[in-house]
Length: 105
Image (cartoon, rainbow, N blue to C red; front, top):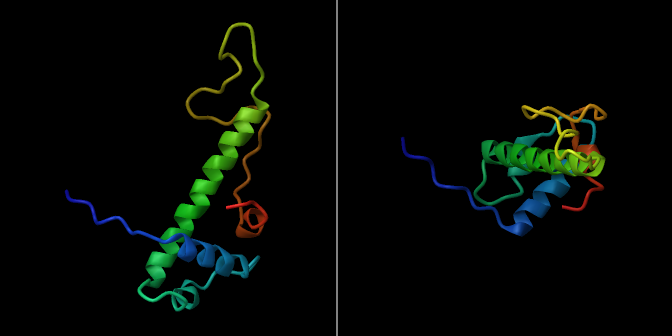
């Protein structure tokens, strides 16, 4: 099955999208209103890009947290969790846009 062409977003568009989403803080994001800021982006495009940016930020935060909590041991990788689980000392809390705003994109 052939994949759809990859959507290319300019850095300025991504920065504008992040700023617009950060204005909503605790409220539900209005993707239709944000889509009006762009020339040829639909609400579905905006919603998809928001999810991509959020998931990428979550993966980076998780990777950093795992890297920072990792304790070196004599026998190598015993302290690492198996099967993609979080480190036992970590508690996973889903990130919100207001949590991610102060983080440098």
